[in-house]
Length: 300
Ligand code: ATP
Ligand code: MG
Image (cartoon, rainbow, N blue to C red; front, side):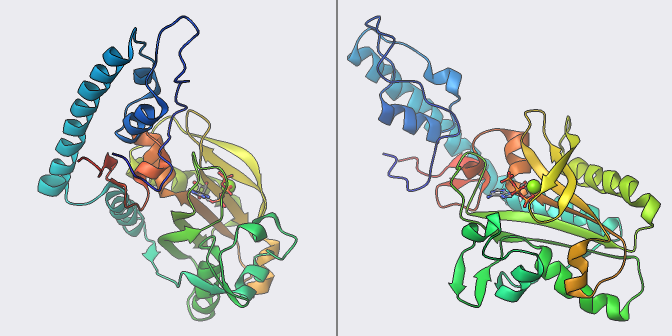
């Protein structure tokens, strides 16, 4: 049986009560199990004349889905040997390194003062989403403060352009589970010293570079306000799912980090990229004890 602790509903299951025409649909428990095994909403629509017929059908559909998931796991263990999140992370990192960026790694636990420098005080909408360790430290909700801190030092000794990026976990208390995780993987890149009149073309170029490394097509760039940076652009997929947000500097936040130059920055959610490319709910592609590489682990 499922016995899962994570949300497992990438689709809206149909009502198990039938349509009032005497026909039955899968029970709520059966629907949850089939969703967990990766069946799509359309495959849950089937109607049955009796409970016995429904249960027989469930058993055979479940059996086939278990077989499919087992085959996916076998392929992972025997050939691919890296889950999609790790594969994507390696692909994007290689593309950025080849484009002149340096990968950095900063702590996941950051001081409160770093949030304050991002303009996130107790009145800010993001404040209620922070996981506090104690009064002075929290789990980072974004990579930008770490990149700002490293860049402040780097720019003191190196000349622009300086191009760095980080790929790492970020943490936010979220209430909407369909496209939000409490722990997710952000890719944040920043190019310091971009010529003012080249920022927009560099922004598009860098967005395209990441999308192409991720194998995603059909995305668009729209203007959108960010609660941290103000006016910026978002990258959305064909269904309108936000994949990334991007801003340009100089920006009013730079002064708190004693940085004074122009820049282009983009932050992508890697699980959103996987969800958009491969389908299924976001939990299927997240760091998880329930799913591995999009396949369900619970196959007994
Ligand atoms: P949303 O409006 O979808 O909640 P956001 O605008 O608050 O996202 P940003 O701060 O712009 O998110 O973060 C950059 C990217 O990180 C987003 O475009 C998205 O791809 C990803 N992201 C943000 N929050 C989450 C989350 N809780 N779970 C998964 N991915 C996330
Ligand atoms: Mg955003």
